Length: 291
Image 1 (cartoon, rainbow, N blue to C red):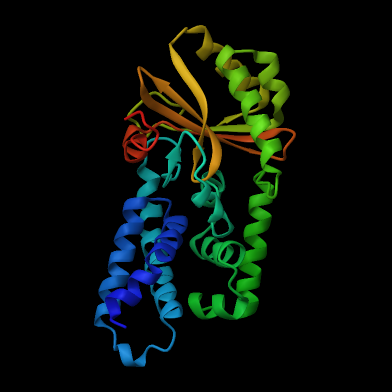
Image 2: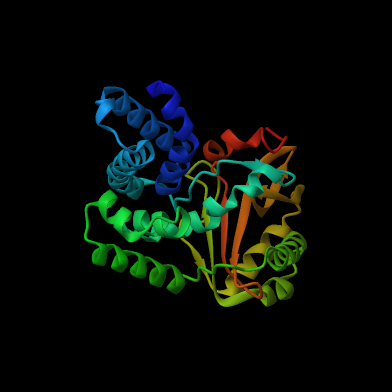
């Protein structure tokens, strides 16, 4: 089989891995293109396992890129949130079937708390189901070190409110309640849905008005939504799907204005993550049917 065909067999998996490591579609595309160039120049007769070779190359390229862009992101205006790959007004059954090898956009945002090696080890183990022997070979660490990286990543995510395995229907009901309460500015209802130490993160990228620092505490967050509702702006809100998970899509004058995803334990919301940067929304706005 020709090298190009063999590469294309793995392209979607490589893009998914690079995107989950980098949080940027453009950066992920660049990494996969670089992996393709290296694949073309490799001695094909010496490659025994195509997937292992390509995943190793992509992971290492993505880690190098991640270390570089993390420094650049310190100059970003306000909090930085990842770019989604897919936004839709209705769930895509085919996309939902792929979720076994995926992570939600909200979890990707929380992964920003991890160092590059922690992030890679966590994703390879928890999402792509690699064993520690393979992870060690990919990252150039011992198996014991890789186990420690994954353990530390889990601990940091849990300390940062991340919750896993919340029943989808329960989470969606909570999201719908929050959407209704935030649209009406019902301060008491909003606060009742939040953990006392809830956190609101907004990414406007300096292009639109957004908080430059995370807003902490249920009461402060509830007051913010109350104040926004009082302005009386004509904002349409509806439940949509971001990378296969339910989210709140808000439209102003028919255009996608923001997307919001929640992190919860199924009972209370711990994190509200809102992407407002128009540059990041532009790539997916057409998918939502509202460019």
